Image 1 (cartoon, rainbow, N blue to C red):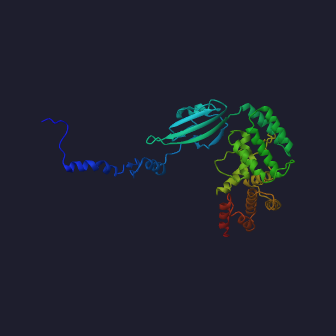
Image 2 (spheres, one colour; image 1 turned 30 degrees about the vertical axis):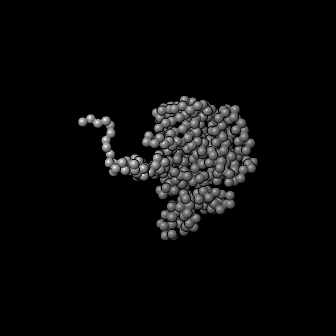
Image 3 (spheres, rainbow, N blue to C red; image 1 turned 120 degrees about the vertical axis):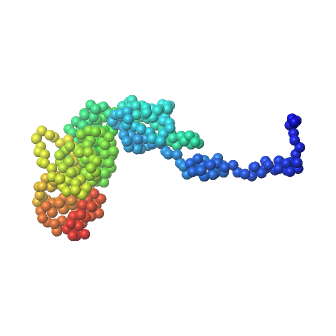
Length: 383
C-alpha cells in the first residue's frame, strides 16, 4: 500500500531523534596517518605529525657526483650528465637575474652548460603528493670557464716572474697587473698570487708585511680555487700546499715535479704505515726550468726526503741541522713533524736506533705520523 511520505512515530523514536545530532557531535573525527596509522584528532594535528614524524626529504644538488654547497663556482666546462637533482619534484632556474623558469631534471646540466660566464639561481622543490607539503633548497652557481689561451698566458707570466729566487711583493704586484691586462677573470691569477704571498709570509722575505701565521690563509685560499683547474702549474702548487699541511692522502694528484713527488711519496708511505719505496733518480737534462716557487723550509725538507727515499744516508752534521731547524721558533708544527721524521729515519739508517727514540717520542701524538712513530717505538721496545 503506498504511503504519503510520513509514518507514525513512537515516543521512543522522537526521543532518539532529538538527541542524535548532539550525540554525534560528541564523537571526535579521527584522522589517520597514512604512514604509521596513528590516529589524530584534527587536520592540524595530522599536519604537525607528518612534519615531525615523517619529514619530507630535502632536495639536493650533486655536481660531478659530490653534494654541492649552497654557493659554488664552476670553472671547468660541464658535460651533460655532471649535474643531478635528487629528491626533487620541480626545478626552477634563474639566469643572470631574469625571472625563473621551470626546467626538467634531465635538462639541468645542459641548461647550465650554455655559457662560459653566467650567474644562476637554482631552486629545487620536493612536493609531497599526499598533503602538498613543499621543502626546497636554493643554490647560487657561478659559471666562470676561463679561456684556455688566457690561462696559458697567465701560467707563462707566473713562471717568468715568480718561479725565481728571491721574488718580492713588488714582483707579485707586477704579475697581478699583467694578468689584469690579460683578462677580467682574476680568480686563477688571484689564487696564484695568494700562493706567492703565502711563501713570502712563511719565509718572512721579499719586503712583505704579512705575519708568519698568515701563510696558512693564503695557501688555503689558493687551494680552494686551484683545485678546480686541471693544469700542470695548479697541480704542482696543490701538492706543495698539501705538503705544508701534511695532507698525504693517496687520492691527491701527483705534481709531476720529481722533487715534490719523491717527497710526497716518502712522507705518504710512512703516514700510511708502509715501508719507504725507493724511486729511481730523475736527472735534470739541463733544459727544464723551475715552474713553481717553494718556501725555504719545504725546499730543504724535500731535498732531504728525496735523498733518503733513494737510499742516500744523511751525514751527522745534516741530521744535527735538521734537529736545530725543528726547534726553531718560527716553524710550523707540520714542518717540525716532517723534520723529526727525516731525523728519525736518517738515524736508523746509520744504525743509531737509540738516538732516534726521543725523536720518535716527539711524534707519537702527531696526526700524520703518530701511528708510524708508535710502530717504530714498539719494534724497539720503548713504548
